[in-house]
Length: 303
Image 1: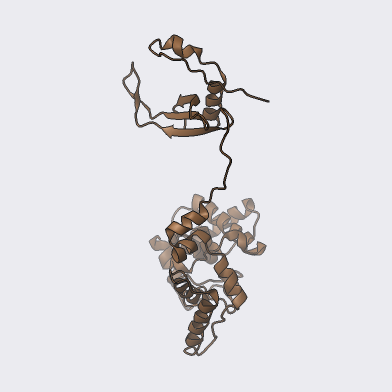
Image 2 (image 1 turned 30 degrees about the vertical axis):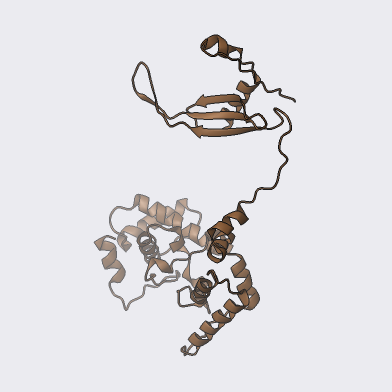
């Protein structure tokens, strides 16, 4: 932040300029910025964030010097002619920039803090911190029940409320607590409570299948990067690491087609490999005379 804006923002602290814009306190750290997705907020908050970011981006692009009233007022008038939102006062705009820039230009920092009025408190001393502590006791190999963890969670909040003089912390109902636990990542919960081995078995299930009974009943496609780098014969420069795409008959384990290329596995490599599998292979014995046996694999393509 430049020296001009620092001086302008903090001079005459006892004097508040008359403005229709709400003056918001700067967050003490980036932890105070909301963690929710912007789309989860009401429409009016999303519109206000859009208004703020459009003015900030326009002013930042045209501003020469610090974010002072002298520099901002004429620019705000010009920006209002191009932006379809009501213009802010210079002091509010400077506040937005201070929060926005100090957060690393996070869009989240422009959400109005007025929506936090009431009993809502986003600091880690609120109900969520007690839920986090309860989850730590839930994700253990002993696998306690949700009911036992909810009792622990409720006791923590009750003990904390005995220390508070003002507003008390409101605990979740058992149903709300249960629903929040069920929204945790299922695999991570299984790893913590049952171990990685059982979790992998649970989440990597493969349904039983009938083995093939004849040749070309089922053909698998596999892509593999080769452990070599090809060089250009003339320029003597590396061409890259090729990919080999193989079509393997599951019954006979024979290779029925292939494609060798430098592009990563895609529709193109699959298409070329299938075309190779469909076409006759007589060219192999003609081109490579040292090959003793023929390559008779040929896929019949039924439309």
